[in-house]
Image (cartoon, rainbow, N blue to C red):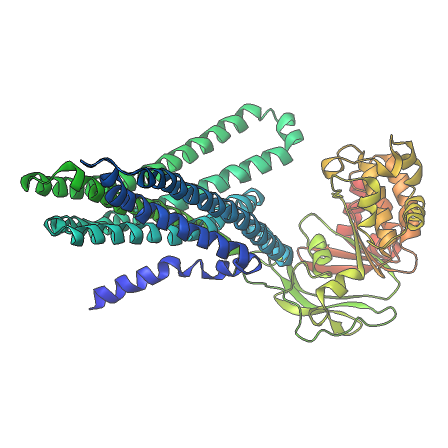
Length: 590
C-alpha cells in the first residue's frame, strides 16, 4: 500500500511543477482553446476517420459488384474531404499552438527578468551572469515547450488514440471472428514501464545538460568581458583550451540526454510491433482474408502511433523538469532586502547619515566591526585607509545594496530599512571608478540619471561636468553611441558623463567611490573641476586612494581592518597617526 501511495505521489508530481506556469496561458486562452479544438478535430479525423474509410468505403469500391457512379463520386469526394479537414485542423492546431507558445515564452522571460531586477546585489554575487542568461533563454524555452506544445499534444494524441480505439472496437464487434484482435491492445499498459524507467535517467541527464550549458554561457560571458586582460597576459590559448574542455563536457551531457531520449520511441515501437504480430498470427491461423483484416490493422496502427508520441511528450516533460528547477531557483530566491510593509516617507530637508554599531560580512569573516560614525548634513567626508579596510562596503550599505548583520544606518533618525528602496535610491547618487555606460547614445546614457530630463537640462548637466565640449566633438554629438560599456570613450570622458548623470539626478546624498583613481593627470583635473561643482549643497562621502580628491573634504575618516581608527582634518591626522602619515607620504613620493 505504501509503495502504491509513493507511486501515486510521484505521478501527481509529474506535472505539479508546471502548474504555476499554466497561468501564463490565461491572456491567450481563446487562441489556446481554438488550438485544442483543432487538435481534437485533427485527432478524430486521423484516429477514427481513416480506419472507418478503409473499413466501410473501400470494400464497396473494390468488391465483386462495380460501384454506382454516385457511390464512386461520393467516395472520391469523401476521401479528400477527410484529409482536407485533417490538414486544415492540423495547420490551425500547430499555428495557434505556436502563437500561444511565443506569448507564453515572452511572458515567462519577462517574469524571470522582472524577478532578477528585484533581487538584491548579494544574489548576483553568488550566481554567474552567463548561467543566469542561459536560464532566461534556454530554460524558459524548455518550460514553454511543455506548457504549450506538450499540453497541446496531451489533448490531441489521446483523442487520436480514443478515435482509433473506437474504430477498432466498432469493427471488431461488427465482425465477431475479429474480436481476438482486441487482445492486442493489452500490450498498451506495458509501454508505461520503459517510460518510467527511461524517464528517471533522462531527468538526471537533462539536469547535467542544463548545468553544462550554463557553464558554457558563464565562460563565454566572462571571456568577452575580459578581452584586454586576456590579451595582456597572453591567455588566448589557455582560454581556448578551457572553452574546448567545457564544450566536451557539454557534448557528453548532450549525447547522454540524446541516448535516453531516443531509446524510448524504439522501445515502444518494439512492444507495439509485438502486439501487431500477435494479431497477424491469429488472423492467419483463422484464415481471415486480407481485405477483412486490413482495416483493423490500420486502426490498430493508429492506436499505437499516439503511444510513440506519448513517449516524446514524456521526454519533453522530464527535460522541462530540469529547467523548472533552475527557473524556480530564481523565482523562489529569498529577497534578503525586501521593501518595508509600511515604508516611512523620506525625511524632508537635509539630515545626518549615522552608522550605529554596524557589523557586516560578505561571507564569514566580518568586514566591518561594530563601526559607528556620523556624516553631518551638508558636509563633505572622505574615507581613507588601506585596501580591504571596508571603504567600498560602507558606500554599498548606504543605498542598501547590502544590509548589515548588526547595527543600523540612519538618515535623519530613520533606519534606511524603514524607507522604500526606490525612495532611498532616488536620493542617492553614486559616481564610481568603473563607470558603466550602456551601448546607447550619450543622450540616453545621461538621461538614466533622470528619465524626465529635458534636452536643455541634459546639456546643462554636461556643461557642469565639463563634458559638453568633447560630446560636441564626437561625430554625432549627443546622439553618438558610446559602445558596449562605453568602450568608444576614454576613461576621463566616461567619468565626466557619470558626473553629468549625477548632476541630472540632483540627489541630496552623493557617494564618490574612487571616482578619479584610474585617470591620467589631465583627465583628473577636468573631473576635479566637475566634482567641485557637483558636491555643493550635498552630503558627500568620498572614497579615494588619491589624496588630491580628499582635498575637497571637510573631514577625513581613517579606516583600518574594518574599524574606524581616527577622524579629523589632514592637519590633525598627519602628525598624530602613523598609518595616515604612511599612506599620505607613500602617495606623495610615488
